[in-house]
Length: 247
Image (cartoon, rainbow, N blue to C red):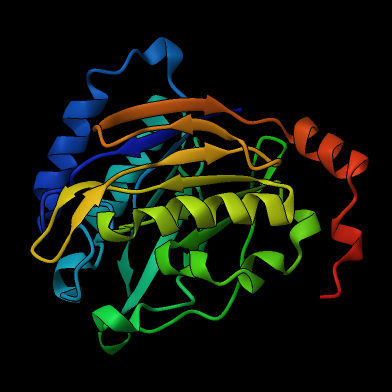
């Protein structure tokens, strides 16, 4: 399966302008080599903001991503707020919603917990034969969230607005989660800046052995890599570490 990482600089707290920017970037893409799955950063249309009035997705926003999926014949994962929760939403290439994950760990240092409500459940979904678990940004720091039912997961997708000041943590934690769980980890971060932070992107695909398969640097664009469930199964068969886990 080909995975596309959509790394860009959203227009701060302006969902309509960000939709236009996404459309302009997509218009430059060769449809003949479009990925099977396209992944956007956390709070895709606004950047990270505690103003839920700005970050809350409306029907027009949801239809925008649904139409994008159908027109480009690709699954789409994107982020935004709904009912005061910070979500990762995935829509299939047929326009039907596949998953809606509510961020479990809210970033208290940025007062996210004062403006949003945490989720408490995990979820998985499938694209083709790949079983995927979504998480959002700060969730990456909590390995137990990845460990639960790890043997059932082929790939973890982390959408984020992770500041450049802690980019080393971002890169290290993505690699650690891949090694611990013998699964692909796809991290999609933003670039640019907002009133609080600078962002260096560093979106990437890590393979089940912890090797960096794709690095996106700090440029805007759609970056594509392939993942294989057979590789996950082969590595787990040859090095069956997960069965020795105590929890």
